[in-house]
Image (cartoon, rainbow, N blue to C red; front, side, top):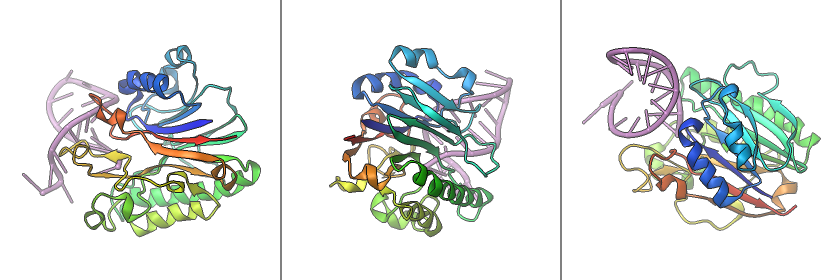
Length: 255
DNA sequence: ATGGCTTGAGTGTCAAGA
């Protein structure tokens, strides 16, 4: 099973690129973030024609997540239980015996801001829910835009980003708290090129200069981690005209 | 340089992203 995650920064703008990418890469599951579409506007027909069923949990303008699958999804959950939130950031479904959780974690804007407090509260609620969810379904994958660079090696210039948003100690502690549940960063199961990133700012030729961060992740439960055969970042879509600022991350599981 | 792009809203120019 090939599973992937991609923050598309508007599915309306990026739909042609998503369709091309699905045809080229042929994932079994694709988790999308920042769709920025109400569910009624979701392009289900175009995706069905490409062989994918779509689950969406979206809103106008901001946020929005979706899961595209070749097999029928079951046991669908929208939003974080026990966390009052108008922002559409979470969607879960079981596909081929694997619990797929697609998350768009809050950005946090600036360390110490109200949005930062919301980010840390959201991450704590996610951890509390996942503790139960892993018990219920040991084959679990958490995919998405975490908006956290877990370590200095995930940052092009660690000194520039020291204790800045996406890199602060409390954010990294929240990421490690997810690992403490038994989840594993699939990307770090394998030898990877130095300076591997998944996001590059649109400004100042950041992609060309590889001024990026690795903030999009696939975390696997231990049972799935033992079955993971590869995890890669696909930089190809970031090179296209009018790209998303994020690149897809792909993991291959032997089930 | 509370900047530098991009998107969505909406038709001015701002909020938000990361």
